[in-house]
Length: 311
Image (tube, rainbow, N blue to C red; front, side, top):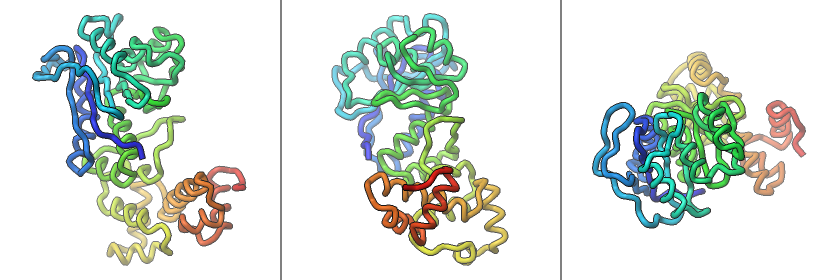
């Protein structure tokens, strides 16, 4: 897994509060749950006024160097023609260029992508930004490959996200990479947010998909299924364990996730099987380790889901 340690929030004038608060709250919750994180709030100046009117004070100055494997988050500011041409933003750009290396990840939230572009970090890279600004981003940085309608995009160590709450989605994805899917689910549940995806955006793990609900019982059922994939599971067993009727369980599960219990279980097992296949395991071994009764069941589920034969 890709470990997180130090996270630097780079704050520029007219910053949008949600672009800062969303990822900040997400990583802070992960820290409170035991993930070893240190959060830094940095800027060339001590006080920055947000676009919404609240002033952030006692900000730390730009450090001369940062920790290896750190994450720098460029929080989006209110857009206007000539954004990031002010002296404070220019200092941020120069600092970013001076400390950046291939083992340091940089995340541009919303219009933060424009600052990354001015720093030369989007040249020949795939990226995105708020849906209202993708055309402008492509115009200002013609060598960038700007993708519209994406929650987030990763190109090597450079990440960009859509606006506002999309920073939360990307923060959860990074937490998942660092601490695992179940940990990310627990953080998302505590924040009472959903895992949102738009058409053609990078797929999130099936273990954290279908969690865009706040039904505690169904979350508990999903947790149980996830941790017992190799067991012989049935709706009858689940209804007994969770002390509800099979009919009520099936109805509530479908309402919350959009899938039947059986289809959801197949989704989980397919992902696990694919991970084993990617590691070079045989189809038979992958099927067994993912909880399928045999290779034939895996092949059938694979073809039904992906419309292709498993070879």
